[in-house]
Image 1: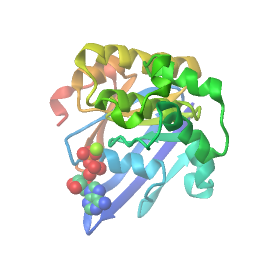
Image 2: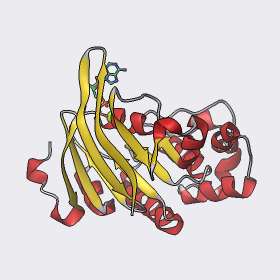
Image 3: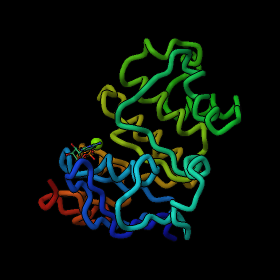
Length: 226
Ligand SMILES: Nc1ncnc2c1ncn2[C@@H]1O[C@H](COP(=O)(O)OP(=O)(O)O)[C@@H](O)[C@H]1O
Ligand SMILES: [Mg+2]
């Protein structure tokens, strides 16, 4: 079953065309990685899906609904973005994970604690000062914040950048595990070819603002990417 239909979207920013006639269908519960050179429009595409920006042309449907007709707060409960640039708010790790729930108007402590574990950090982190964490730890808090909302689709924008190579594969495994456990759909932007091969059900190549190829991970032709 398909969960997301992106149809012929186009986006121009400051007179530069960033996305051109881009179409992509995402299946429910799959992990689809999005690869492509820097500046090809990967972040812009995720921002359109989360409605931080709207395409100039084309449509995005979540299930059968045009996302323009879904109230933004409801949309962002179901489709959650973990941005490329991590941001921490002043306060503890607990406060930071609770923040996503706050925006949605509730607080569930058990889910907050579970999300921290799912993101690969132990409970001792809950009371730590979020601003003082390492880059990789902040990335994981950012992931936990998204998980705590219990999304249906997770948009991950280079989620493991800055994470120690020694724990990289563990963090990937954590992400895959909770995705499979929760029937979560993931659209995962990465620069790392090995990572894409490890985590993906399918791989989509974004080049010059459009999707040039979508393949099952085993069949993806790396020669034509980048
Ligand atoms: N707000 C903006 N205004 C103008 N240009 C932008 C803006 N955001 C992104 N861009 C440009 O759009 C292109 C695609 O950016 P981005 O989606 O961030 O690419 P990627 O994530 O694939 O590296 C880049 O050339 C970038 O400079
Ligand atoms: Mg980007």
